Image (cartoon, rainbow, N blue to C red; front, top):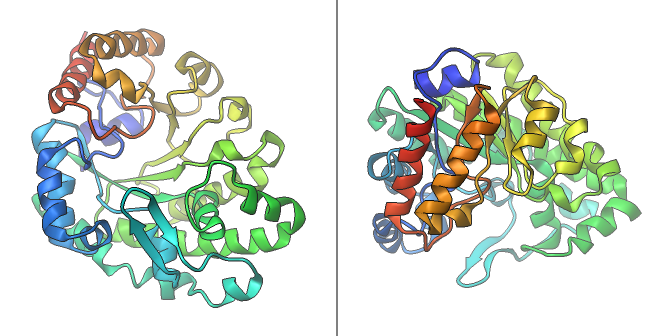
Length: 343
């Protein structure tokens, strides 16, 4: 297990602040595109442990991050629960059989039955751990139940969330049943990731900002906390990162048994430090588009270092890296994070 990364999560002294980048394996690396072409399509790449291992390790070897993030996708969970998932070029993921009723939910697999179908993910983790350097951490991840449920109900990505939010207000009981079923699968999925060898868990709530503040805990955060509590009871030594995107108005409502709070780029880091800096390590939160400019990157890295002022912090982007970012700029970001943290 990476001493630098995991010690930072548990608040111990480290030689410098660690850094990794969300969505590490991606189209910004030509080497990734080569492997992707060999795999044929995105899901086939997720299902191939050898290729998924290769693209997981690429950013560590090429860019120099302190932690690898498992190459997979959050939607493998509903896919293995029995939904009909496909990735359409130019459009993204699509479920051809979205959940519209309790009968639709009941036809899906749950718990151990669904989690045990994700063997290709666990095999990928084992291969990565065989090849990953001892001083690098491996981060496993999952989507938050709310984020997964939005795809499962809407059938695809959405800008309005009107179908799932209609259910939230008109049939909250059904939405809670969906969230509860997904939560049980996620618990076991992450347990199996840990047993396969991951060092750190991250829970992404990509669509957190779609919920109004008064409803956020009920329909999202409490399910994330339930997952964290389940994992902490079994694996207290495994750090957990919570990353809800776009919730600066909710920071006062954050609670739970986890180590790291991921700060997205739209949330001021100074505000996050004020509200949460005494309770959690903060991660983030550079605007990903700053990577188009080395000068803008350096400016932000130095600003973050000044804001945190010696507080525990993990450098990261405030969301995923974009596909047309020059690789040299990504390397510059990592180098600058290491430079300023050694001051």
